[in-house]
Image 1 (cartoon, one colour):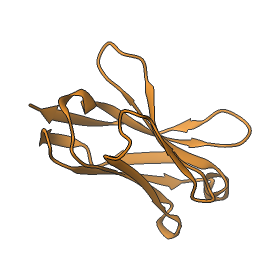
Image 2 (tube, helix red, strand yellow):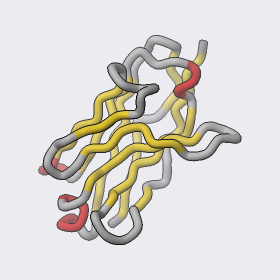
Image 3 (cartoon, helix red, strand yellow):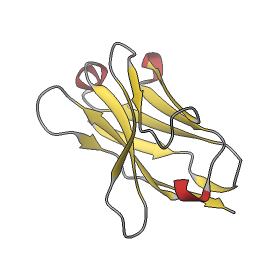
Length: 117
């Protein structure tokens, strides 16, 4: 499975961005897996942001709950992360991942999100 993330950029605090992550390659494996977003700020460990299971069930990190929404478009093999009310502490490289029920996750290349105060 290959993942291509896009949609990052520079935005002022309080603004919005929508990230996209398109899957290719073993699409069947991707569709039967959860898809998730993680982020990594400079000098920090990669942290969980949101996850969407193949049945549509979602879960969010407490730090983004109520502000971020993960969704998917199966026809386009794409998962989205709508980010509203952005804060400077949301600044990070955002990575999408396909998380199979067995085996290691597949990672995308990351997209930079910078929120200015």
